[in-house]
Length: 161
Ligand code: NI
Image 1 (spheres, rainbow, N blue to C red):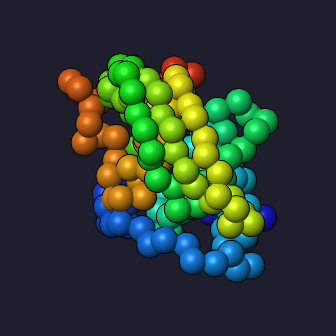
Image 2 (cartoon, rainbow, N blue to C red):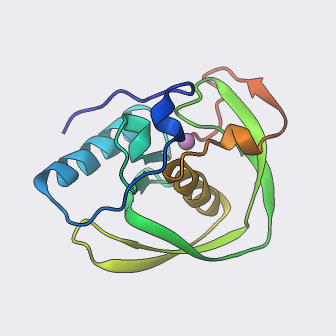
């Protein structure tokens, strides 16, 4: 595994829709391993493949620091409620903004063995799932920020996804 360069806002790869994964190849496995390593090294809680320049529908999320979730071809099945709070993104370093997301999300995805699974999340996990899935459609959270993007120091930085 290796870390990959995180693409930043202004890079056109972040604005393109991603393609579905049709089979798990050694290259896809390597990509997933590299995405996890890149996310952990950057102290993020989530990372989507386009953030490392790959237009495939793959995201990794780890809100606890010990239990990574790999989601391939994820789809949201159900949302409910609302939560409004600060959000950041590894592709928009040093910034944070207020975004309203669903309070609860249920999604379906495939794991690294292309087995389908469902996942339910609230709080940060619900926020991270929505944020990462937006990346797969070429959208950044800055499009949804209420008010201004604010500059934050490294110590103050919100969970970045
Ligand atoms: Ni992000």
